[in-house]
Image (tube, rainbow, N blue to C red; front, side, top):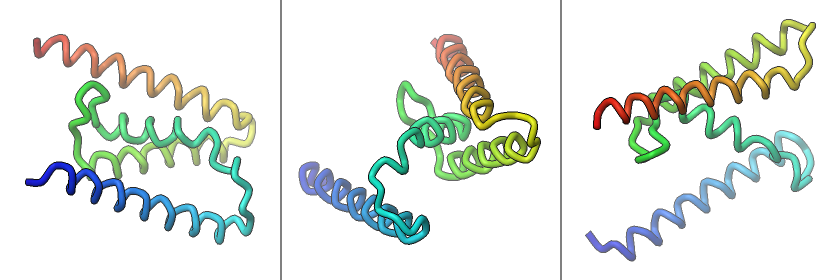
Length: 113
């Protein structure tokens, strides 16, 4: 397998998907404000970690990441529809959940060694 060609192809596909995603998001939000997605990194990382992808080695499954997105969306929806909690509780809960999964992954990796 040609490594250099494959690496460039992966970057091309990633950039194309990011461009399409940005275009669709700007159509959805009807604006082109560049700071709209600030803070969404935590959500993306948390969804992937909840889905079972290891941060130490990057091994995981796409279906696990999809399930992580669904669980994270469910948690965010429940907290939002409570009405009594502010939006900051969503970020705090996601951070605690992310910390729990990272500690759990570290414990599993230490046990395997």
